[in-house]
Every structure is written in structure tokens, then in C-alpha cells.
Length: 159
Length: 159
DNA sequence: CGACGATATATGACGCGTCATGTAATCGGT
DNA sequence: ACCGATTACATGACGCGTCATATATCGTCG
Image (cartoon, rainbow over the protein chains, first blue to last red):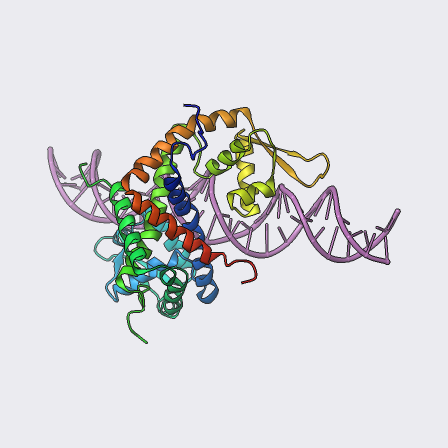
């Protein structure tokens, strides 16, 4: 077994190209877009999904756990991030009247404004650095690939 | 202009599926593999490329900047990470005799051993959660997609 | 009512990654 | 030999994300 245990290891060339490409390129892409977003709105890449989700819900308040589910984050990650966002005045957390454990998350006026102001540019950036660079079949293939990978990561309950 | 500025924004459904799939699934995949790697070797996902690269170079020492280039990391990221790895006894840094600025990075015996011991399992995990889940055409498509994206991120010098 | 388990969220510690900055050594011209 | 520029690397501060744990509240059973 002392072949090339280089991490490349037992992966053949296509597998390796795909794997390394995915694992190396995705963070670069994310970072680039984060930088653009931050430059023109002061938001970070992590703020974005939170703001999108809250905005989509309009006035209906959103409890923390529910928000975490919608975004697909761990609860503690969300808690930390909400703390940072609250400090910056983007959101507010208030206690639920009936159940004092739950925190209802609200977009502040400023949060909403900043988000609305950022959304256009962000979408444009995603197009420019991602969507417009690929063909439609490539986008379809990518979407399917990601869905496949995700299905295998989260084995259906009671696997 | 007050259409759906939801971040979905001006992206059509395929674009959105592909984008969100990529941006959400990749970190999950990375995390899963990191957990497996850590569980069975004590290495983190970030240690891996460093060890691979040093191992591939065999005995030829590697200066810090060169290593950063090979891996594709920022210099300061590598410096921080080498500090952590050095603390754990995986690598060593020594000053170059001729040019006292450069730090030559060496794999320690333990580092090499831990890496060799981890490589098999890691490759297997990559197969299991990634390569084996996709078809060969999907792997090829993915590799090409990533190469395309990367080309567009790093505009050839003197764009 | 009161203890107890479950639920909702917060917090602390720690590794990771970025940006800005610091420090030391070398190079190049004069 | 000297001085400014450049190179190589380290460091500090800070936001991010995870894991383990704390805290408060609620539900329920006796």
C-alpha cells in the first residue's frame, strides 16, 4: 500500500481534478464575492443569508431556531452571528411574550435598508463571477451535482 | 426596481440552484471530511495540503513562500498555520544559512508518520463522500466548471 | 406546588483566515 | 561603506464557525 499515499492517493486524475477544483476554487469564489459585498455595503457574506431570510418573511417575526433551520446553520453559529449583527444595528432580538425562552429576530429599519441597497449589486456580482461564466448545461449539471452530494451527506432520517 | 431584491434577486432558478448548492454544500462536505480526518488522525483539514506538499518534495526543503505558492495560500495564512503545526510537532522551521530571512519548512518524523497514516483513510473518505457518489461525466463536468471559475477569478496578469 | 426533564438560546474557548502592520535581512545604487 | 527599497516572514486584532457547556424557561407528573 505504499503507493503514492500523497492524498492524491488512490484518487484517479479526474477525481482529483474535480475534488481539488471544488475544494480550492469555492473558497476563492466565496471570498471574492464577500469582498465585493463588503466593499459596497459593509455587509459580510454571512450577514447575507440572514438578511435575505428575514426580508422574505416580511413583518412576520422569526424565532432564532426557525431562522437557523431556514438558513441551514447550527443554532450556536446563528446565535454568535446574530450577536454581531445586533451590535451593528442590523437586527434586533426580543423575547417572546408567551414563551420567554424564545428570541424573536427582527430586521431593523437600517438592516432592511442596507440589505435592499446591497442586493442588486450582490446579484450582479454573482452573475458576473459565477453565472455568466458558465453555460446553462453547466449550471444544471452543477446544481444536480450539489444536490446529489448533499443527499449523500445527510442520509435520510433512519438511514 | 423594487422587484424581488431578495438576493435571489435577478438570478433565474437554475442559476440560483447552482449558486446556492455550491455555496451551501461545499462547506458541509468539507466539514464532514475534516471531521473524519480529525477523528482518525488528529489532523485538521488545513494540515493536509501542507503535509501533502512537503511529503511530495521528499527531503528537498521548502521555503515558506514557495510552500504558500504551491498550496495557493496567502503567506500570512501559511505563517499562522505553520505556527500551529509547529506547536503540535508536525513540522519544523529553520533559518536558511545563506539568507537569514527565509524559513525552511521541514516535515518532522512524527509529521511524516501521522500523514502517511492518515492518507489512506482520507482518500477513502473522499471517494466515499464525493467521487463515488458522482458519475465520471459529472466529475469531468465539475472539474471543468471549477477550472473555468478559477480562470475568471484570477484574470491573467495584465488583464 | 415542586422537582425534573426537555427546550430555547447564550456563552466561552479555541482553531481558522484575513487584513494591516511590524521586524529583520538583503539588495542596489552611489 | 551607507541608505533607501525590497523581500521574507511574523504578529496582533478581529470576525467566523465549532464544540462543549451554561442559563433560563416551560411542561408535566406526582
